[in-house]
Image (tube, rainbow, N blue to C red):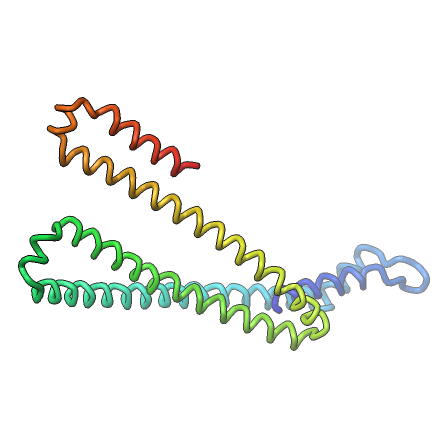
Length: 219
């Protein structure tokens, strides 16, 4: 809204400069005087101060918001780690011996990392998008409701395109994760059984399998 009002000031001034005075075009001095006395400088300076103030307030609010969400995510991560370790200590020794420590650590890190990203990034982004869309719609309806309704008619098309893009991106990421996991398993198995691999001359086979998975991941 401020940007629109700021643009309207220059539009009105440009239109006023083409007004004929006594059947003749105004001189540059008259245009300059009309501009100064018309309050263009005062209005532009006022909008500049408002824009500067809004920018500073937005920066401070964004910093505080990001800091608070990061703090909440770290606290939840700490609580989950403590609860996870407490539950592991309550399990039978047979289960602990059956599962490798590296697998447990990887599982814990993977799940907590996803939870941390969801709390610190995805939730604030979702709230921001919903708030921005709601406020933009209300402002658009308040300023010019007929144009806002026309733009809302195009909303389903944007939603469908966004859904298609998200589906393709998720599919590609799932294939990439599966290929990367398969390649890492080949490397891990090779190093764990390195003596057997060398005894049967399986180095080339292991390398070829790993390269195939990584090439498939790039595709």
